[in-house]
Every structure is written in structure tokens, then in C-alpha cells.
Image (cartoon, rainbow, N blue to C red; front, side, top):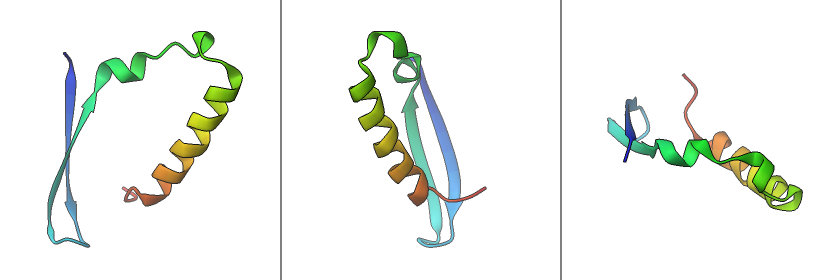
Length: 55
């Protein structure tokens, strides 16, 4: 399994934050997913991106 580790300093928590991303999840084929499922996933992703810190 390929995993990518992202580390950054959080000013809010005053500590280093470590996130692990599974690269195989980034390889999801959009053509095999229905448009409704894709729309729901995109809406959820936009909510998550609002909480991530700006770099």
C-alpha cells in the first residue's frame, strides 16, 4: 500500500500535525461512478477543504 505522510505546524494547536493519505484512494476512476455519487462526493470535499489550513 502506498501512503503519503504530510506534516505541518498548526498554529491553533501549537504542535506538529501528521496526516496520512492513502494514494490508492486518489486513483478512483470517475467514469465508473454515477454522476449523483460524484456530485455528493464533490460537495463533501468542498466542506472539508474549508477546514484545511491555507499554505
